[in-house]
Length: 118
Image (tube, one colour):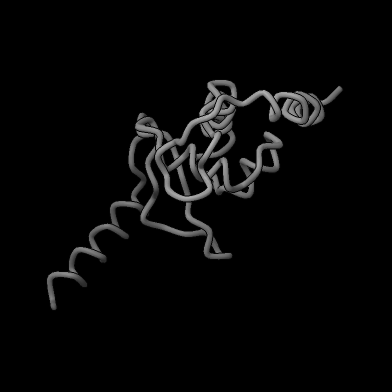
């Protein structure tokens, strides 16, 4: 069975066993407190093939609903949101442990300069 098939099968059953609670991240994050979910999302971000990941790509790989992936990403101290978006307008996420890219630094500098001219 493929990795994604295993994940879908696992979370089809495990989703019913999630602990109750609210993760940081806002509305819709109720019940998103499973360590297994957090570990899978962080493992998807750690994939060496990608420097940045979007919520839809992580959700597709792990089989976890996009709303839950977004909650996990927004509440994790190990994750940072890049100041860039992909061509579809999706926010990009990566691990804090990864060094900032030149594109990120340039985007942050542009945003800072644009904000300072007001």
